[in-house]
Amino acid sequence: MLPHTSRRSVAVLSSGIAAALALAGCGAGGSASAGAGGAALSETQRAAVKAAEAEFAAYIKPRAADPVPALPAAPPTGKTLTIIGCPIPVCAKVTGGATRAARKLGWKVTSLQNDNTPQSFLTLLNQVVQNPPDMLAYIGLVRNSSVTAQLSKLHSDGTKIVEIAPIGDKPAPAGPVDATVIAELHKRQSGRLMGDAVVADAKGPADTVFVWDPSFAVGWGPIKDGYSKIVKAAGGSVGILEVSNHNIGKTIPSQIVSYLQAHPSVKYVALAVGDYAAGLAAAKQAAGLQQKVRITSRAANATNLQDIKDGTEWTSIGEENAASGYRAVDQLVRLEMGIPLGSRIEAVGWHQIFTQGNVTQTATAPEPPDYAAVYEHAWHVG
Image 1 (cartoon, helix red, strand yellow):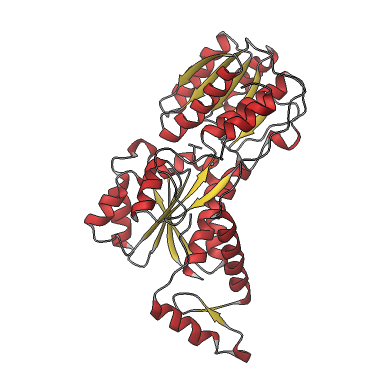
Image 2 (cartoon, rainbow, N blue to C red):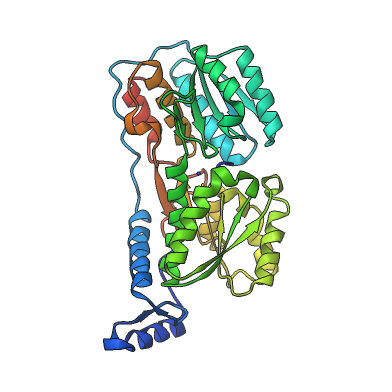
C-alpha cells in the first residue's frame, strides 16, 4: 500500500475438476491429489493449499475493528502535529485519517506532501526540523539511516515520532522513531492474503506475476515476499513486472497487458497496491483478456470495490487506510501521555478479502467497521 503495506468463491473449470478427481484416485494408495491444472501435488503442496483455503475462508468473512485499550484520561489538547504524506491516493487516505483524528483531539495539524522523490522528502523534513512540532507522523521515502541527523534533532527537541509505511526500518529502543504503522508485519500479511486467494482458487500451482515499483523495494519487499511464499509453497511461479508509481492511471495498464500477452501462461496478476488497477479493466477488455486473467490487489480503494462488484477485478485486500491514520495518532497519544505501547508499537492491523460475493458498498475505500468510534471511545472524546 503505501509507497515503501482477495478472493472470490473457489471455482474451477469442469475439465479441471475432472482431472483433479481422476488424479486424486491415482498414485500410491490413491493418496495423491491434484491442482486445477491437473498436476499431482506433493504432501507439502497439499498442505499449502489447505492452509490457503482456510485463511481465505476466514478473511472473506466480515472482520471487526481491532480493540483499542482505553486511556486513563482524555489526551491533552492544543498539541501540534506535522504530517508528511505523499501524492499516491492511498497515502492521502492514511494522512487524511490522521488529520481527522488529531483535530478530534483538539490538536493543530500541519500537513505537508512530498512529490514522491527522496529529495522532496528531505526538503520537507529539513523544514520540519526548523520548527519542531510536538509530534511528527511521516511517510518516508528514504531509509531512516539517511536522515538520522534530522530525526535525532527532532527527538532531542522532544518531538514524538511515528513512521507510516517504513522503508525497512524498525523502531530501536534508543532510536528517534518511537513507533510504526503499516509496517513489515502488516504488509507481509496483505501479501500473504493475495497469495492465499490465488492458491485457494487454483487449488495448486499457478503461473502469476507480481506488479510493483522496485524503487520501493525496501518498504514493499514484505508484500512481495509474503505473496511469493504462499504461491510458491503450492508449486506456483511468481514473475515480476516493474512499473513506476508515477504512471498510476497512465501507462501501467498497458504495461500489464503487454506482459500478459508475452506470457500467456500467466493467469493471475497481483498488484502491490490497488491504485495500479486504474484503467486496467478497460485495457484487459480491449486486449481480450478479461475472462483469461484474474486480478488481485491490496490496499483496496472504492474503484477496486466497484470493479470487483462489476466482475472486472477479481479480489482485493481491504486494509486500514484512514484507520491507519487513527492508529498513528493513537500511538502518539500514548507516547505523549507516557503510556507504554507494548505490542502497539507495530501491529498487523485489520485486513479483509473482498470478493464479488461480499462487497456491500462501493462509495469509499474499505475500513474496519466503526473504527473512528472505537478509537474515540478509548480516548474519551466524541
